[in-house]
Length: 130
Image (cartoon, rainbow, N blue to C red; front, side, top):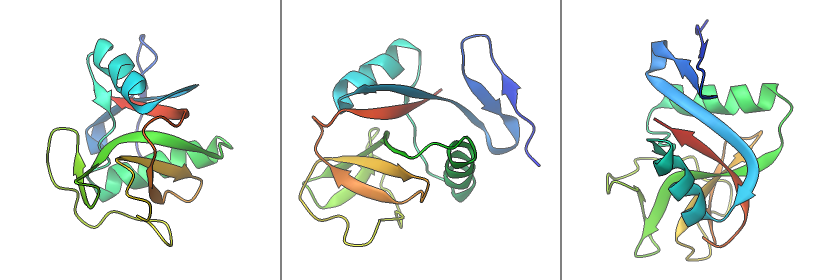
């Protein structure tokens, strides 16, 4: 079982998987969400380990949330998934039929935890990590 620490700034720290995050329920488009995360000394979440992907999916699903969240992935040249820092995303958990529309941003579907390529102007909830 993962021990979690609730931080005074609203973030949740999960030391066992090196994750400090906050899920934001108010919707923003991708760039605005990233700006909010950066202003909070972080970035849109990088689900770059199976443990982080699983924890976030379970945490939000167990809270009864069913929504799409902006994450820190983008489609380079509309075909290659990368994190915002340029690191390649290996084996993303795409939803069936994804990626499909040459969109440049990536979102995660809760409760499934699957990803989809998405229009960057779509207003969605988002997850910050620091």
